[in-house]
Length: 121
Image (cartoon, rainbow, N blue to C red; front, side, top):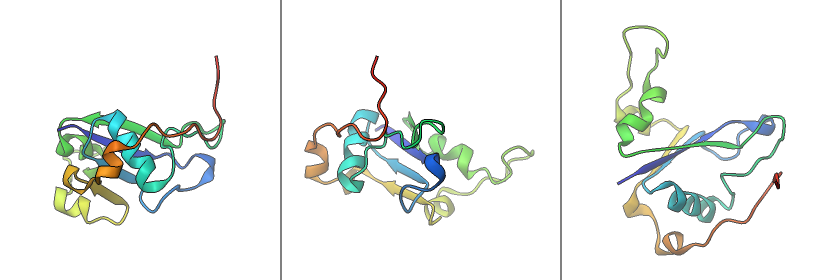
């Protein structure tokens, strides 16, 4: 199963939700619908045109691989001082939503409405 990571970019000067890192066990398109249904916020929203998107969105087949950068406490130093998955998931800044925790309503949700600044070509 694919995992999708929503990383709050603090655009507009602040955090959007209680967690800076939200991981949803779903492909990106479905995860965006789950995110919107659960948090009533389009993760593709642009709050501030100078700061860019509210969230960086990325996906991977492995939650371990997807979280590696953020679990690396040393980040730029060698050797890596890697947090365990258990430690990382216990961090108050992190929310992990497994497929088994996604409701039927979230599975069936439609596309989120456009929010914030929208560039039209």
